[in-house]
Amino acid sequence: MPNLPAAPPHALIRWSHRVEPGLTLRGWRTPPSGKPLLHFVHGNGFCGLSYWAMLRRLGSHYDLFLSDVQGHGDSDAGERFDGWQVTVERLFAVIERFAPEWGEVPVHGVGHSFGGVLTLSLAALHPQLFSSIVVLDPVLFPPELMQAEIESRQRGESPMARDARLRTALWPSRAAAWRHLHQRGGYKGWSDEAFACFIDHALYANDDGQYRLKCPPQIEAAIYSSVPLDYWRLIPQVDCPGVILHGDSTMPFIAPAVARALQLNPGLQAEQVTGGHCFMQEQPAATAERVAQWLQRLAPSAVDCAATARQALHTP
Image (tube, one colour):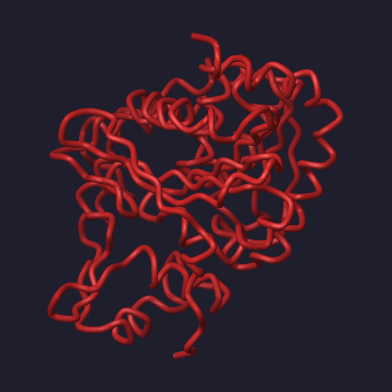
């Protein structure tokens, strides 16, 4: 097992925000420096720092703000998952809370999988929030599959939810967790650097030295079982420039869904990249470079949004 360094917490500041009594969201951010800000939302079952192999490479050009949603990372889990709509509004509340510290800088939304859908929804429901967005393999079902997926979830038959409920969540040591998960299942093909970040930040050590997943399997399963936002209604409302990066060996329904999204919103673009659903964990350096290139490419068309994005957050 490679003894790779974890994400350096000394380069980051921990943040927290109580969104309601008994529920506090937490995450990490770099100190505000006046650079454009990159707001990142993770996939289901992960956390912001589990993507540090990619994100750290973007830190020289962007300030980073990593939002961990309910039950992920160090954010409180609560008694049950409170739904996609509530999750989006909580993310917006966090951005509103910390916006004064960033100043008048462009804010770019980036998210993976579940976090990619949340980022698209944030951009649609809160116009002028982001100057641009880059979403990584968002889990979008084409319209012809969406109703069947919703009915499956309502009947409690979602295969992803079932797998999540059965997921092993506790190991006697870090080494045991590494051996059990490394290059298996959804972690197959991950770089050792990215996988080390997952082990060190999506798991935590109990007082007795055992390692447990930070995201309880019941929260991950509840997200897979819940009915998502009506993103086919929301995608046409995204008014900032954006791109969807999707893997060439990801889940087969994603490519036609991305094509549908581009038909609905001419302001969106797409690029197929090498890799699976977690291509950014397989190739963190290459993905960071593609994200940076796209943000630079989108920047000229994002100027109009940039001027109003901060104003929208600071308006009472």
